[in-house]
Each structure stands twice: as C-alpha cells, then as structure tokens.
Length: 297
Length: 168
Image 1 (cartoon, one colour):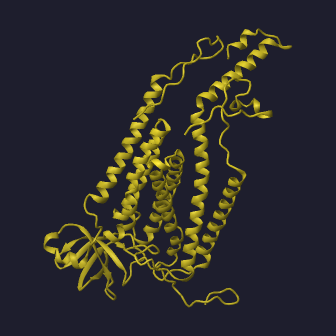
Image 2 (cartoon, rainbow over the protein chains, first blue to last red):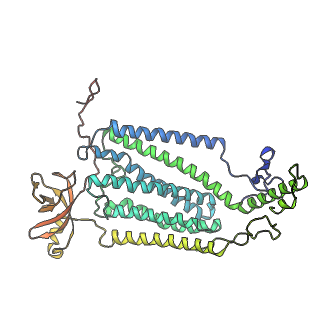
Image 3 (cartoon, each protein chain N blue to C red):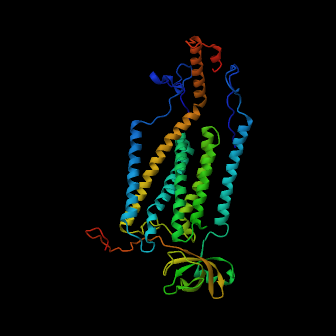
C-alpha cells in the first residue's frame, strides 16, 4: 500500500496537530477515517448482533425444551456450533479466499491482505471459544474435558496454525513481504478446514456428526430448538461481521501509522523546533536564556 | 526471520538539554526482539508437534467398534484401546467397583466390567466408548465416555403451557 504524502494537510484549528504537518515542510496524509455511512452500518450491525445474541440466550435458556437424552445440557447447542461455524467457515474461510485474491495478480491489493488478517484475528477468538465451549459441553456429556479424537485435535491444530499466522505478521517487514509470508501460512492452515469438517465422517471420532451441515443437509434438531439454533447462527454471524469491520478499520489505521511513522516523527520534531524558536525570540516576562530551549529541537 | 530496521540517527546538533543522545537503535533491543520471535516460533512449533503426536500419533480412529474388536481379538491381546458399542437394554448392573454392562455392535454382544463411575448420561441404548482391554471373554475398562448422537429431540414434545404459565 502506498500513502500519498503530498496530500494537502489539514487546515484550520486542527493545523496545530503534528499529523497535519502544520508549520513544517512535512506533509502527511490524514489517518484513514470511515465515511458516515460506513460508521452507521457498523453501528447497526453491532446493534443487531447484540439483539440477536440476547434473543438467542433468552430462547436457549428459558423458552426451548430440554433434550430427551441430554436434558438441559442441550442448551450449549445454541452456542457451540454457531461459534464453530463462525471460526471455521466464515472467518478462516474468508481469510483463505482473501488470501487467494491477494495472490491472484489481477486482484492483488493489500486490501485483501488486511481483510485476511482481520478475519484471522477474529477467527482465532472464535476458535478459542469453540474449544472452550466444546470442552465445557464435553465434560458432563462425554465425561471428559478433552479427547484426542480427529475433530478436536484438528481444531486445536488450526488454532495453533493461525496463531502462527498472527505471530508472523508481527515480524517487521515491508507490507508486500509480510503479505506474501502470511499468505503462505494462511493457505497452509486452510488445508485443515475441510479436514476438520469431514473428520467425523472419515474417522471414528468421539465428537458427534454434524447436526445441520450433514451429508443430507437435513437438520436433525426439532421445533423451537432448530429455530433457536438458526437464530444463534445468524446472531454470531452478525457478531463476526461487526468485529471484522472494527478490526479492519483498526488495521487500516495501524498500516497508516506504520507507513507514516518517520514523517510523523519528523513533523513532531519540526513542530517542537518551531515552537522553541518562537519562545527564543520572545522570552516573555519569565525571562531565561534562549539557548536553554533551542536544544530540544 | 527479519529483524526490526534500525531507528534513524538523531540530529547531531542536539543541545545539552536534549536528554540521552539518540542514535541507531541499540543492538540489544534488536537482539531481544529476534530472541522473542524465535522463542514464540519455537513454542508454536512445539505445541503443533505435540498436538500432532498426541492426536495423530497412534491412530486417526479414536475407537474400535465392538464387532471389529472381536474380529481382531487375537491381534489386540491385552493391549489397551477404546472400544465402542451401544449399551444393551437391561444389561446395566451396579457393582462395588463400578458398573457392569453389555455393549452391542452389529451382531456382537460384549460384556464390559468397568471400574469407576460412568458419566451422567450413561444409560441403556446410548453409544459409549470403554477404555480398557480384553480379559477372557469380556472387556475390562477403567473409563467410560458417552458418545451421544447429533440428534436433538424435545424431552416432552407434547408439553403445553397452561394459561397460568405452568407447564403440563
């Protein structure tokens, strides 16, 4: 990504801010700021996510009936599969697609790299929630917090791989170099996604098969339980979209800071120098030697 | 692995009040960053190897159905493995050490003597995994895992809510 450092600096009262390059010869583009429509969309999605999550919790705990076998333990089904859906399919799936779009010469843009990074970061949070909620559900139903079966192990492997992706992005490098390195890790990690999905079909696992995304695409959950499960999927999807938008916006600001780090530092120093020169030329009633202040420039 | 680029040199005409002289970032900072990246990388690789060895090192299949286990009984000997089967109705008997029951898989019915308490969902007609080994014509286990299905059905599908809010 390239930043246009010749952008007209901010004018008016904000001109004293060091980012503006005011009173200096350094011109720094203003930090990226979403449009009013974008911010409004973000707020609406966040509100819908909040309402949807609250409705899922209300239906899941107080309205839906207990399960014939699991009793009240079934109420975790309204959270755990939805969280896993977001982590595995939405977040890491989006990261894989964004990575491919970055690598494809015709669509190569650091936008896709930043989107992939945002999706991975949110996905890692949901991946951790998947493992934790599954473990909480597993203890009273299976009888153990953890089992080394293919579904659980491959999900934990995916988490470690994408933690590695995040760690790699912290290593200083040019944006294009970082994007290429990250793309390699993201695509390697994404191989694990279909393995996780089909693990319950390919091997004998303690983890049960899919309830919704099964081979027949025929959900094996009934009545209000099914509708609450669906609402949970929608609500958690909205939570993901909201978190993705916020993280992407933060990522854009981080990239802007990284790209303008030197210019910002120069602008700050030059602004300090100008201020010191003014003080030196007008020592004021307190007096003092001008040379005491010139040195800070 | 790339290290952080050195910071730009400080102006050479800094005055006496400019504080500590700035220059290229001290080597110790770069080295500590490099060490941090290496340590984080090694930890992640270590965890990954641990997961792969623990999860995939022995077998991708977490259990062996009882009918397949019986077919391989001579090969398995007294080796510990995970046996799977459905708990036969009427076969559950509490003992002083735990619980005895029979698992069914295909045409095979295999008695299991378990030491310890099974999970709370343990019941007739539910698939379970017993961790143990063959002992004569039965299976001796010290841990039971309940392998519940992915089907969810209301416990009282005909239940209605009365006008006063109570469930009937």
